[in-house]
Length: 338
Length: 244
Image 1 (spheres, helix red, strand yellow):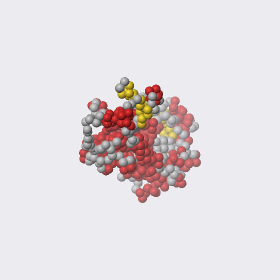
Image 2 (tube, one colour; image 1 turned 30 degrees about the vertical axis):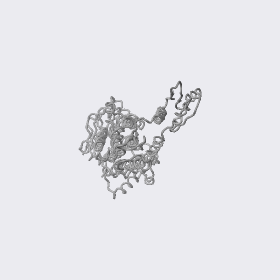
Image 3 (tube, each protein chain N blue to C red; image 1 turned 120 degrees about the horizontal axis):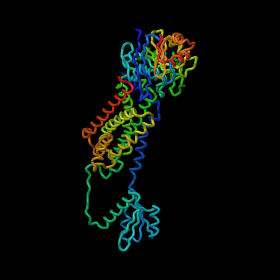
Image 4 (cartoon, each protein chain N blue to C red; image 1 turned 90 degrees about the vertical axis):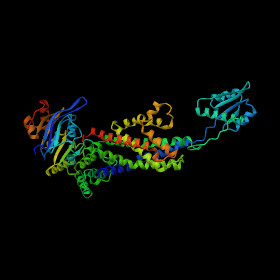
């Protein structure tokens, strides 16, 4: 089978290119680790300046996760300006006055949290609540929540680049045309290419998912196998999209230009931000493959769903791939009619 | 039999530029046929149209009475592109084995064919190197070896000897003549006059027209000139003259 010949060649080629192999396998691990470090950090502890705050209130405040320092009014104003503190609490005419530094929303909301906790303790007659979780738990951190989206995104991103650029090189160095001067059929070229890279993609997906789940300990309620299946489907979509777009790039630089247009926007609509409230914005996401891949990954990893529960996402991902693969075969007509 | 390769009314337009204006050409079986013309005269375009890599704006190509592009005919054609079109990450041997497999040469025969082709282009000692370490001339020779692998009945070579030193060039021409003797038809593009002299028949291309066709001697006789170069200049002035 001539498809096998192409697969074998791609393997030989990639094995000879150690750096690309490294990009495929090491880069996703590297990036996920950094994200895990950044997103998994402990909650921010605000620094707060106090001026003339009543003894009783100060005691309650100091039980909270924040650092406090007593200052005079001018000292505190100076400290705020220099961003040494995030907020300034002072009692003026029997009234609690609070000035926020205000340029960093994380710090601002951390100060508010401290305030809420403190006032709750001062005024325990407030409603007592107990919270249960249908999915996840208080343990679901930001990293756990957007982790599945990011796994999907990086699989998509790295596959797109490597697949797209290498198919483009096949065009620019003339080997694609050379192949079309042989009796190879167009579908054999496309299938061979996708399968050759497919092998590496499967390994990449397994490494990425296994690393996130078993090493970074990302929240995982579903089956590992299901995660792999979705990653692979997503990667095949990315690969066929990459090879397709490479037909419209003259060189590597033009290929890279597709990233901000075709890849980056997908991550905005894949569930990191909540877009459900405005229908037309939400609709933009629905034409993007990552939307479905990320949705399926979240359902599986956070809500513990089975593959059968996300068959809709799976169907759409397969649909995208089939369309892209078909368009790939058609795009080769530019070189040879048959 | 006299029209193994037949081009009829070929016109090719890229955007607004007409690269080939009207080319009718027949090439008999077994000939070593040269397409001679300066760069930009449309040689590569014409060759690509022959093999089916370009759809002519107008006109038809048939090889052995089959309309191109035909997958069956492609199996019979050896093509050497102007750019080397090889995989630089692979070794010479891997390149040859890849193309041999594409042409469906079975494993038993493959090693033999690879050796044979490498020997013709004098690369036997360099087969284990990756192409990144090949010189320009070596890549050119590797590219020629790829075209010879499956013992095609029609060889189409686009500027095959560019960047190859005179000694090896002479030896490659000797081999081409030998390949021709086995019954292979060879079409070669060139802009080098002394190479053109070695062809059985020539078509002179200029500005998208075929300005003359005939054997080197016929062309010189008709233009009453001593050298092909002068003949080319003569026909260039009086465009579109049929000779022979």
